[in-house]
Image 1 (tube, one colour):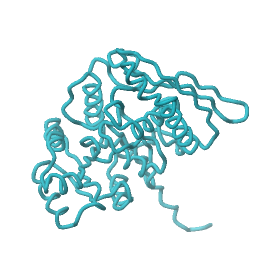
Image 2 (cartoon, helix red, strand yellow):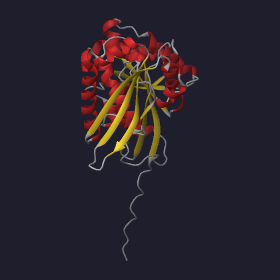
Image 3 (cartoon, helix red, strand yellow):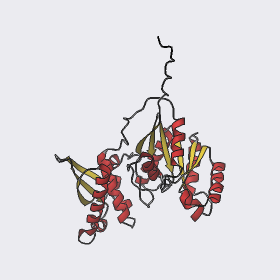
Image 4 (cartoon, helix red, strand yellow):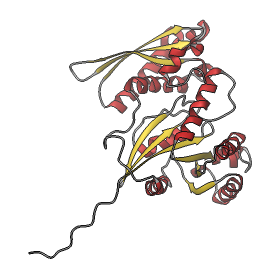
Length: 314
């Protein structure tokens, strides 16, 4: 009879929700896509791009990390902005851990080393909820280290942070260290999602978001904030391709003309770019058809908020 010892039990599984919070354009969506290794949240240079909570699922050793990309938090004025900010605070309040991203390029460059007002307000809000956060100084590839260390000290003096990480969501620098740390602190428990699942965002919503991303990139005026995109029809084809019909809703006829462009050139350009991105993300052929409609009150209609995953009454 063998006298060998029984093998040690496998390490326990872990699972936890981590909210990515921060001011508009702090880099939350870029970080989420970097962590997941796939595009699940749209990214543009414009602020307030993300409108609803997007979940990204990452496996790190025995841990399943469920990241929640929240809309940027700022001082809202309109109904849509209030709904976005409410969704963001809800995501922070519900998560096991909070990672607060701060745009170091903004603070060190434009603000000469000062902390931006939106980040300060978020820090105070997190404290008001009785929560502690992990600080992630983002965009470190754009700033010099001495100024970065000064900013880190100033932020830690303002807020209640358990740890500080310096990262570049764009280049990936420091992201692995942040992920590894989170994998050790999320609570023990069973995984909540299948091992190969990257997000819980419905494909219809992801498709609409990708098309809206192209609108943000190509329409340089204030118009992007006055439009929304909805996937109206989705048909799977026998050859493995998909036929998608989407509608741009704008508030005025002049805005419709801007989206269409001269001779339909702008909407064609948006459609070509959106289709290419959809095919890249979905790894299949996409037949995309886009319509533009004027709906003056879309921003005040509950069904559009439901389509974006937002609370109309926020």
